[in-house]
Every structure is written in C-alpha cells, then in structure tokens.
Amino acid sequence: MSAPIYIPIEGERVVSQAAESIVSNYRLAQFDRGSNTTVSVPLHIIKEYKLTPRSAMFKVVNGIINVMGSMIRREELRGALGLHEFENLNAGDQRKLCEVCGVPFVHPDHPYNRWTTIGYHRRFSRHFYSTFAWLRGEAVFTYWPDAFILTNYRLYIFDDRKKKMYMFPLYMVETFEARKSRLKIKATSGDFDIRGRVPGQDHLLQMWQQREWDDLAKDYLDWLIRPFSYINPRHPLSQYTYSDSASVATQVAQETKAEMEVSSAQAGAGTVFVKPVIKNRCDHCNAPMSWESIDWVGPDQYACPSCGNSHRVDYVRM
Image (cartoon, rainbow, N blue to C red; front, side):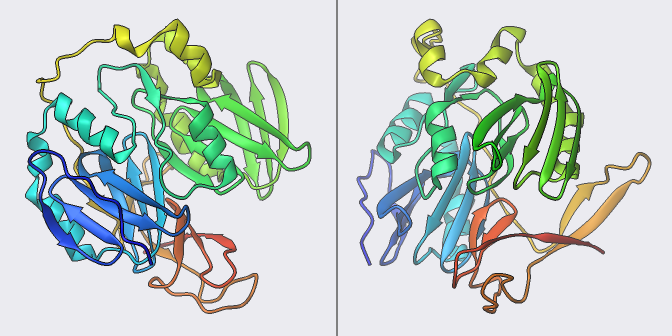
C-alpha cells in the first residue's frame, strides 16, 4: 500500500482519510495501483461515477478516469459531493485546483483542450487521450480497452486484421452496420470494413441520431481528426481569454444505480426500463464474479478479478 500525495490549496479541508485515499471538500486523492501514482480528481469535473471496494470509474467533463486499489467508501464520496463547496470556486480557483490535480482545466468558452489522461489507461486509450484534442461538449459514450473509443462526435477504432487505427467523425458517416466482430462504414471519404472488437449497432445509432456535433462551429469539425500538436500552434488557447474571477457552472455528479432508464431507439416505443446484469462466471477462466469483486474498465465494461479478461454489461428489459 502507498499513501496518496496530497497538497491542499487555500480553503481546502480534509473530509475523510483512509490508507490509500483522502477526500476533501474540493477533490478526491486516491492512490492508483494500476499506474502506481496518486490520482487527484476535482469534484467539480465529475459527471458520473461507479465505485466498488477495489476499483472506480469516473466519467469527467473531458474523459474517463479508471482507478484500482483500496477505494474510498461510497458514503464518504457522497458526503463530499453533497457539501457542494466546490460550487463556490471561481474560474481561477478551479484552474489552480486542476493544475494541482494534474488534469486540464476546461473552460466552457474554450473550443478545445486536452483530454484527461490521469489514472489507469490501456496503451490504446492512452494514445488517443495524449495525441488528440478534446472538443467543447465532447464526451466518451463507451469504449473497449485496446479496441475502440466512441464519443458523441467521433469513433476511434483499431482494425485487428490490418493492424491499423481509424478515426471516423460521425458527421462524415453515411451508413454503418455493426455485427459481432465486424463493422462496415460508408463515409464521405470512402467505404471501410473493420474487423475486431467493434461498438454495438445500438450505441452507434444513438450517437449518430443525436447529432450533437451540429452545435460545433464548422471551422472546428476538421479538428476531430487533427492531433493536438497541429491545432494548438494555429489556434492557441491563450487567445481565448476569460476572467479568473468569473463564476463557472459545475457538473452534478451522479452515482450509477442498479436500475437505469433509457430512451428506446424505436420510434413511438416510449420509455424502456432496463437492468444491468453481469456474468456469474468468467468466460475465459471460469472464475466467479460479483458486483463487489469486478474491476470497471469502461462505462459499461468490466474485467474479471482473476484473469483480467473484459466483459460487457448485459441490459435485461424489465
């Protein structure tokens, strides 16, 4: 075990402390056994989270943070989030907190920024987060370790047959068909046939139908396939000024629950209630699995605690 590294800022106070975690009124500092580093997560950037005794997954404004180790208790994190003291932080204080935590400060007026790369990431996702830029309003919808990342703006995917990576802006996709380990895409740039682990047809359809990229300025659409090193020199963030004393709206963090409500993809079907279900035993090593023992490696993917083989959550209609 290793104690987390914690340097408080002005106005910050410890709410709860354990062997590998410290919770303050502004952030969570947790030692991550996956990366052997301390991961600090500002509370104001958390949108959704899932906690187990051995792992955690945080969906934040500009990425996903996976942590493995002796985790904080749910009640302690709920208590810190319930204080809402981070809502009193202005833009300057939020930026200072993000710098201490090692995450990029994202201002709503900025058209792009860095992805959050702290925590445990596989080589595939780490390459995406460290190479490409986050665009305003972009969020990871689902991903599979070492296979694909699907956001509401684009799809980043690895072809197992050709050993090649592809980036598909969803606004360029005309038709697609995902079946098992094959994805066919017809885009404005050509036709593609990808083999390997691919996103589900329903997930692709949901992101494609929402068309959230329509809110992006047309000049920024090209940035979806450009690396951060290309965008930043041509459109430096320093030109987008803001007042450090300005107030910035914060996220309302939600803990994922056993039952979720989703909109049906079928027209006129109304609302469908589904319940997430995991496998009783691992398909790879046949080890028993439970909600308390699994490791979360994505928004709807979990890993076997014995062999690390990944599985996807099944949703049963209620």
